[in-house]
Image (cartoon, rainbow, N blue to C red):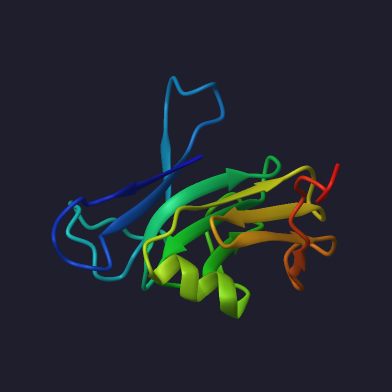
Length: 143
């Protein structure tokens, strides 16, 4: 799975999501934003209602993926990228991100994932419904 975005000056960027079932030899478009500048218009595509700019994509399984966005909630898809649902980020992570901090997301499986940035680390054990800030691991004073 990949997300393509128009790297123009407008925000949000025009976006499409594509998947491949043969290791990238061929690609099929799954969804497109409603205001896209991509052409030609294609019927029967999923909708990518994303008000942000795609920053990263984490494919969790054959059908599930997370898209992390700049200045917008994360998105999650459980149908191979056809439909996407907004998933709110933790408030202090959102403010750090909007300030230009780098953010990334990773999942070990459909339930266990992490979001990390310069401002901290968050973990989920329920597929992203709840994110919990984790203490910073560092050097023990006096050790």
